[in-house]
Length: 219
Image 1 (cartoon, rainbow, N blue to C red):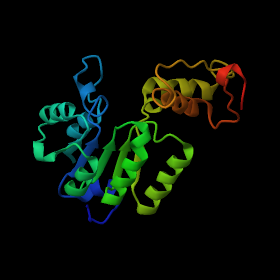
Image 2 (cartoon, one colour; image 1 turned 180 degrees about the vertical axis):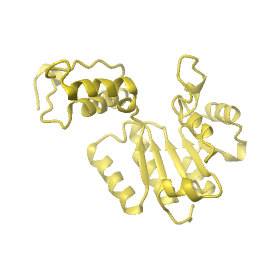
Image 3 (cartoon, rainbow, N blue to C red; image 1 turned 90 degrees about the horizontal axis):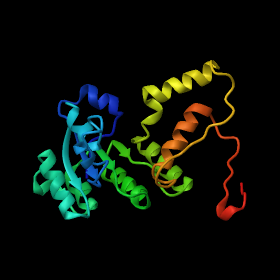
């Protein structure tokens, strides 16, 4: 358990003499291996971003797949004692300041709550945060109560191209916005969450949501 008093991450980066200790739960694609994709900008993964920051030490990783975990250790120079098949063991032994949660959505809330309990000051979560709005709100309330900073990996609205579209919409240069047609691969709790985030940035708060399950319109 990390018993260091929790303060804001900005204060930690400004005054901490030692680098922040980071660990990753889920060492697959966005956790690590997409860094090998020649067509992706660099850094692109949680591991890549941590290693690129001089204020952060990537200290440990956890994954239920032993081969993937070993590849992660080899890629980032993390020795076997700091590689864990059970994320609970990693949280208990490593005293981490920052924890990335890159495992699948059904387990993400429990993992994030465990990281808070272990004393982490910051969480970097993959999308979607969870499988319901209620459990996401529960995590938000717990993080606020403990003074823990939480970032969800939704980078598109901060990308220059998407921000330019928002500027055009807000300026009315192309006339009033009448419709947005969104296409995405995968499913709603995976790549679909990027679409929701961009629509929030472009269009503002939702007034109404409709869907057509099984061909019948519903609200």
